[in-house]
Length: 600
Image 1 (cartoon, rainbow, N blue to C red):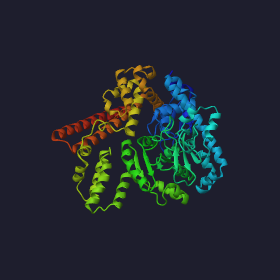
Image 2 (image 1 turned 30 degrees about the vertical axis):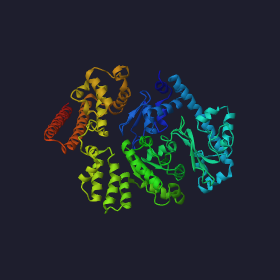
Image 3 (image 1 turned 180 degrees about the vertical axis):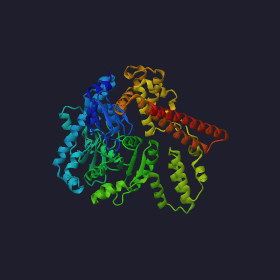
Image 4 (image 1 turned 60 degrees about the vertical axis):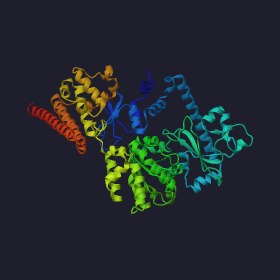
């Protein structure tokens, strides 16, 4: 047995899903409102027997792992670790010796950091200066301080180190956790034992998406101009600043519900925002947003809004993030704070102003255009050059051809120059991006919801009813928008007498969960429908599927006409003709089934 099967054997899918969706028993299954849409009638199903879930409103479905990945925005590894903890499964027993040792060290570091957090919290409750700073000056209340586990590091050289060594942990473990150092004033005065990394500072724990402490950020409370304002845990086995999103464990549910995430610059901005009940807010390590940060947020929502400080560094950071966002497929926009230098200051002035600001945003490139329109003299040649230099460097890195063309035309209009002049400046490589014919990826059918629903309903019928498999005979693989459907369809065509024991078929192991979803769909939609009605329904869904395919292909072909040669134009016209013939063929079949249904 592998780790996945062990976890599945210990956890019930209805219990895992039930932590996110309110489920009610519906016969052998459970039913609830979709967490992916704003439906009012329950169409979200969970089958304990098949250990799968399916959401009829969005077309999504899978096992407990795919559900947690959807809800938590995690990759498979993160989901495996989360469910393993829930199930009490020790993943190290499934790994090689070195991997097992690594997991053992990670577990030990988590224990040390949790103890350190509690130590800092106790010290915080005893330090009057820090209490006044947090509660009076920063206006943070006790509930928020507890939620974010705010603490205080004593000013002595090794208070935390001494405490942890007495608990039985080793010096090398404390170093691996990022809690000790062999630098600084205390060490230079002759002390040769490791000293505390954080001393005389406000402590804010850094937590992963599960809420486990992985490091700390420490803010100075004195007015020492020679000391850095913030000190962070250096990179460790648990903490990587290029991957960590501060506050995500508390923000992810709000991000899913609001369908957008707000990224601010500082940890205190996040804390203040959550206290003001704007909880879909997170932060990165300063202003350095990475591709990993955006991908992490993109798993929860494609709508990411930046609200960095209004100073030069903050605005420059937004510019650096725009091309990174284009690579990840995130829709990046910018919140301009109307008053105050940062969100924390705005919240202290009036929390309502921050809530309103978070709702108002400009798409990142439109924001960039406005920014430089206000900064530069666009009537001068030098101003036009600088404007086009900045904007075209970003436009040239956009991956969407339509978006590139839109902004090239917009910039040309603002500057009063020709599009060709801008294309020439972009260079040959970018021009090719703008005018190339679609590649293989672009010619794939769009995986839209209507196509997926038609695909699944057709295959549900043909999987459970062998006599209906004649509907698959003329169905080309490319008409089906998803790979599991193509794989199952090919097997059903080759094995017309197969009767649904997918779990026992070696060739279908990779699509077992998909087949189980189809079985659940059939039970819910067609369990009481007689065969004559099913034939009509199969014909209807097949026609619907082909119509969507033809519509999508025609859009792709239309885009190719613009730059096609004479020979290529003839080929495109021939393909359009073939698509029309294909659609007429299936519509005729659909009408025949409808006529047969009326006379039977």
